[in-house]
Length: 238
Image (cartoon, rainbow, N blue to C red; front, side, top):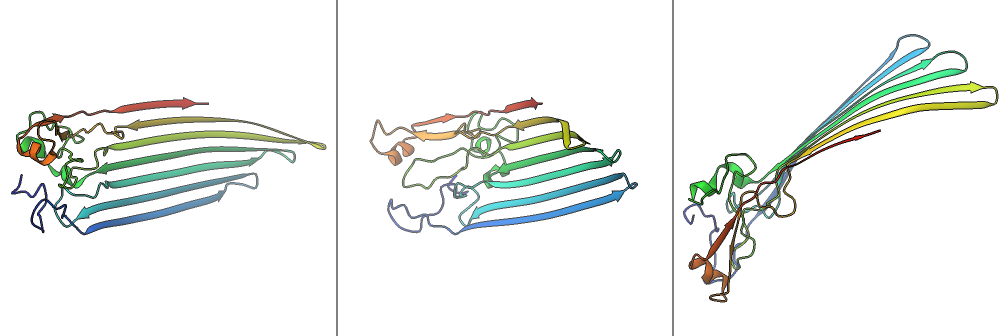
C-alpha cells in the first residue's frame, strides 16, 4: 500500500498533518434543444419539443487517485420531450392533448473505483464483484493521515416520468367550461448509499489500548466492514 501511495507522500518530517495537494474540478456540459411546429390544417396544430443535457463533472488531486477531497465524479444525462395537439372543434369548442416524457440518469463514482483494490491488498470480501463495491475502503478518522477512499455514497439514480394531459374548453354564451384529466407515471430506481453504508468498506481503529489512533494502526487493531444497499422505488400517481 505504501508503494501505491495509498496514504499519500509526506512532505514534512514527523507526524505533522502535512499532506497538501492541488485540487482540480472539471465540468463539461453539452445541451441541445429542438422544436417542430406543424399546422396540419386551420383547426389542428401540432407542436413537438426535445431537450438534451449531457453533463460530466470530475474531481481529482495531484497526490493519487485515492485522495479526491471527498468529492464524487458524476455523469448526468437528462432528456425531456413533449408533444401537444391543439384542436379547434368549432367556434365554441377546443381541445388540447399533451404527452410528455422526462428521463434523468445520474451516475456517480470515485477515481479509486478503477479496480478491486480491497481484493488486491488481500482484504477478505473487500470487493464483491459488482461495480458499486469496486474500489478501496474508506478511512476518515485517522489523524494525521488524510481521509481517502471518499466519498462512500457513489452509485446511480435513474428517474422516468410520463405525463399525459387532455383539456377540453367549451364557451357557452357568457360562460366558459373547462374539463380535463392528467395522469402521471413516475418511476425512480436508485442504488445510492447516501448515509454512510460504505459499499467498499471502512477501515477503523480503536484507541482503547494505546490512546493513539496512529499507534493502533501500526498494531493492526482494525475492523473492516462492508455493505452494499440498493433501494428500488416505484411510484404511480393520478
